[in-house]
Amino acid sequence: MIKQLRKKFIRISILAVASVMALLCAAVNVAYFLSENARLNEMISVISENHGRMPDFRAGRPGNPDNAGIPHPMPRQFNEETPFSTRFFVLYYTADGTLQRADLDRIAAVNDEEAQSYLSFALERGEGSGFTDGYKYSIKSLADGSYEAIFLNAYDQIRAVRTVLLVSVLATAACIALISVMIVLFSGKAMAPVIESDQRQKQFITDASHELKTPITVIRTSLRVLEMEVGKHKWIDKAVAQTEKLAQLVNSLVTLSRTNEGEHAFHPAQFNISDALTETAQSFADFAQQHGHMLDIHVEPDVLFTGDAYAVRQLASVLLDNAIKYAQDGSDIHFSMERAKKGVQICTHNACEALNAEDLDKLFDRFYRADPSRNDGKGGFGIGLSIAKNICDAHRGSIRAESADGHSVTFTAVLRDC
Image 1 (cartoon, helix red, strand yellow):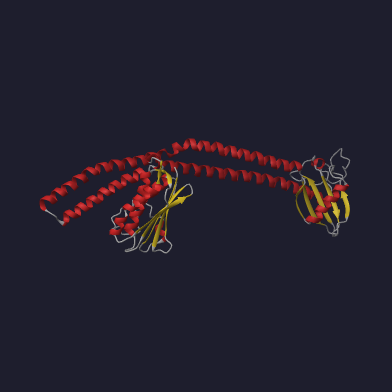
Image 2 (image 1 turned 135 degrees about the vertical axis):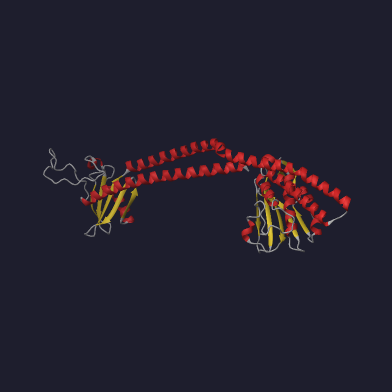
């Protein structure tokens, strides 16, 4: 159990770190893209406002040939060199696709012939903006009914965005890998208090069980001696019955503690699970008949399984014992085993008293019983199904309880080869 808990802790921790790092990486890239895109949109807006030209922000300064002009307000993200480093071209055309003017003065990579292909692109796309062939484009209609298509060279910005994306993804992956290694290395220390507490609990159960066995044995022996002296008496019989029940409880607690240790308490080996389960089920046939039930056994023959044979037999015993105790009077009990993916599937089915769906998941809790009074007269302690669940967990499997009509229950245990 501790090993499984540690694995779960590692998985959850790594998943949490990976999620946070991925969100951080996504946020950085989205923010950078939006920033670059806003800058490109601002450039296009300035070009559009100046009728397809980039204004000279140096106008009105001493030594400038255009000193007499009124300087254009410089956008916050621009500088005096921006007009000279910005490469773009503008197409003006009518709705029927007639090119009125192509301003190619500020671009060297596009000629008149290529301008026609971009005109076709603009006609196909219609009004709007986006990216194409390394350009940020903006297409809009003008007041006179014609259209303006601005294509702004965004190669450097696109490359920068891709570079930031690549670097951030690699950095995120490296950080996740490094943190994952650290989580694995330090998970032992993080789990140390839990491991210590679990070991103390197991040690307490083991010690208490050994301490209880002696007085229970003494009480049982004394009752038998007393019975030989005074003869049969109902109070002695009741005391003996409770003593036997207490002995069974102690043995069940020891078994639960051992199965809770998981794979450390099991000794996997290949065996014929068909023969083992058939023999186990047949040993319950007479017990079931005494309680008024017919046991129907269907076991797929000659199935080899790698696991702990004793534990598998114990699992079958728990399921059959549970079915016999809680089956509706006079109803049949069905027991089956068949091959499953990388293992086997063991099932028991029996009619029972009305069962709430919310009780099904709780049946595998220790000492849980659907009967609130906890005194159903069946002689159980609510531990058997917990032992069954531990056995399934140790075999990398699962167990579940299902009720289709609320008056029958099916227990399905899946075991995988160890």
